[in-house]
Length: 226
Image (tube, rainbow, N blue to C red; front, side, top):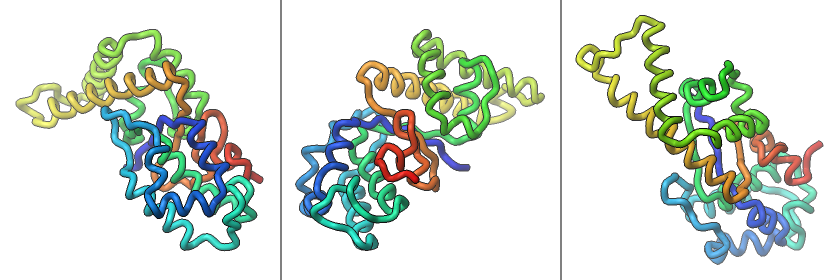
């Protein structure tokens, strides 16, 4: 199953890296000199390690052709796909944490609160996440996670599935997984609202240019869209 991924990004930090001369950016990554410019991580969430992202940036530079070290990423005369590949690594560098979930489970966390069905395509739409975040702001974390668990139980019963742990040993671990995931999603989006952090939305194996940052695709945010 493919994960939908959300990242909280400090937009000012991202824009700063995208405006830095590319040679200076790459040199800083190679010398590990840009770590103090990375936002402080939120320990409640996973975040890619410094060394891994530095490696991703340097690997990108090895395969990039026609770059001008004196120009910023925004000013490079390279393909949009190549530029967005680096931009995605830089958004991850400028994130404070990420939240991810299987497509199949995300319905359980979104639909009950919105009171309507959603499609997998909507998971990548900033408008849907804005609607969901607004709805989430009207309920507390405990009430939301409990509503997710109750809805999951109801769906199982409608399908004729047992809710007896003695008959299915996966019941309790799955229930706890839903409780934990929904709880962390509430915390994640509450921080985004409180601090005005940008929301990066994507999916595993999605073309970098199609990731959404705030309300636009990453290629548009970078200024390299067609």
